[in-house]
Image 1 (tube, rainbow, N blue to C red):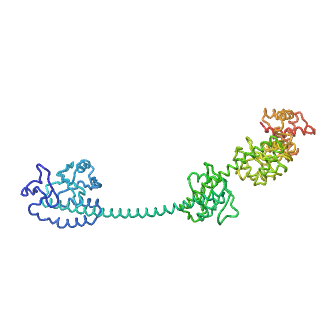
Image 2 (spheres, rainbow, N blue to C red):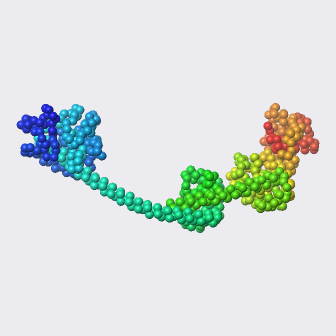
Image 3 (tube, rainbow, N blue to C red):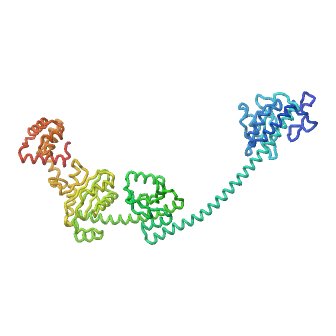
Length: 590
């Protein structure tokens, strides 16, 4: 090992206790070439060949540096303190650098430019940073210290180990660079092949896009509608094409394998599916279908789907589906605007009919919409819980009426939808259809008596409202009520003053109502249930869940408090009407 400047052992003459002469030896700048080489020790003759084989057997630069550091102590009184590899122009320390003096050694080695220089290693003596030079340049540094003065032979062995390490690093670096060059060449070839494939793909893609644009443009130019668009998409992709409306009902199917009958949609699951597709954007695969929303201006009008059970659809198919969905959105949006204009005109006609209008004008305008006012008409009023009477609900009611076989003109009011329907409605067909459409049975429908001429429609509207109101205030508030079935209740309802009804109830039940309020009893309810059960004691007691003797006591108290005789025919009739009005029209208790 080379000594430091000044009083260094490395500059002593050979006859002074084994010191080394200054100068260079072989390739290494710190080993002298002058004079005969000392004889190699037995250790060198046995260890160096093995060390050399180990160094050249590995092509990992970090492993070569580690082996060199592990064998430094085998050639003399040396200790490997640190090793560095040159990585991208910077000296990177090996993991074997001691934590106590890493920063001091690092600072020195990082500033070196290929020279061997003395270094100060805290707690060690005779430190030297030895450059690992090779044909490819500087590969790194090995920092060693000496615990005693090395002999010239030991110094020679260290220089030999340094040259072997540098040579092994040169081989490893050259191999790595060749491998990197080969990988880079392979990467460049792959990129070139990919670019060539991409260029071919772009040419094919552009041709396919032009074909899609041209096919759908021809459909639009020819005035083709929904069926023409789905037919073009089927020809372009080869997959069966279907269109469903907003609620999952089939609008059209083009291609083979159409289900017959088409399955009824589950409204809740269908709504969840639409929301999931809207969140993800673009066509989405769900089971055996590739689905795209038909959504002009953000409002979902339906879905366009390809039936693809084998998942064969590629990016070209997706492009065709997206483009067809855009064309279909424009078509359905146009149809929607036409329908809205027609609906507005229909509403204006219905509004005029409900308010009273000239018959000749009414006949002419209704014929323009294909509605025959010459036939018997019925006015139908529809109100649904938690559904506002907006345009969407009016359209839903109109579709349900058509499905139920009720050709109708439709309009809406603040809280209900009004139909002027041709012919007698079926008993509960409209209610059942709307229950399926809305997914809930919480709705009320009132139907007027027959109307023979348009000038009777305003009165029929009041009858429908009366039927609706009676149904709403009954125990079974959801369902359909016909005005013809109201009986006594036909004289009650929106056409009468509630103040008169309240006065009638107060006249016959006022004392009982007040008594119930003060004493928290249920005499009025008992009387009402008694009349509902036709005066039968056993049925009345069972319905009230009381004993018959308790019922007799309550009826006696009713006679005493009200002053009315239940055996008197006139009193009994008035009391029965009063309890019905109290229960149905005035809301019962409270």
